[in-house]
Image (cartoon, rainbow, N blue to C red):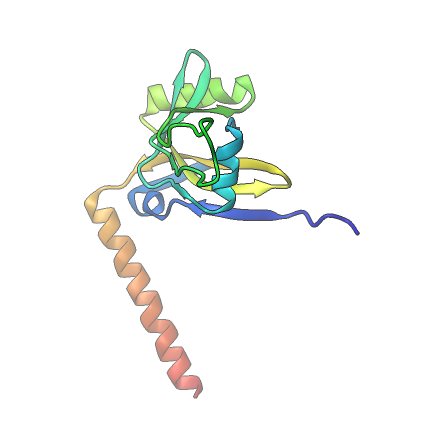
Length: 155
């Protein structure tokens, strides 16, 4: 029987979609310890306050919390440690140029399994102003009201 391939979602960063406009998104691998992968399978991860930086031509994710694995031993890693992201060098240099010159931010959007590997969906984002957030909320409520009215009319 063939192994089923698909994207098994671990965590999503919903705060990022509220606070930023996502211009482009990229897929990156992530360098993890063995007990961290077991923690991810249990869903013990928080992407809420995480961000990415480029240092010396390498891409790093900071502020991502992966909880301790209970059955782990002395090899459990620090939950808030800085983790390296794996991308092609030319993609990293392109992102570095965009972040430095145009004022974009690199924000983790989602963490998921692709086959047996852990992947991170990385967004090139521009920050929203307060009035942008208000406009988004107004659009969502208007859309919800329209759907309710249509549902009532179809009854």
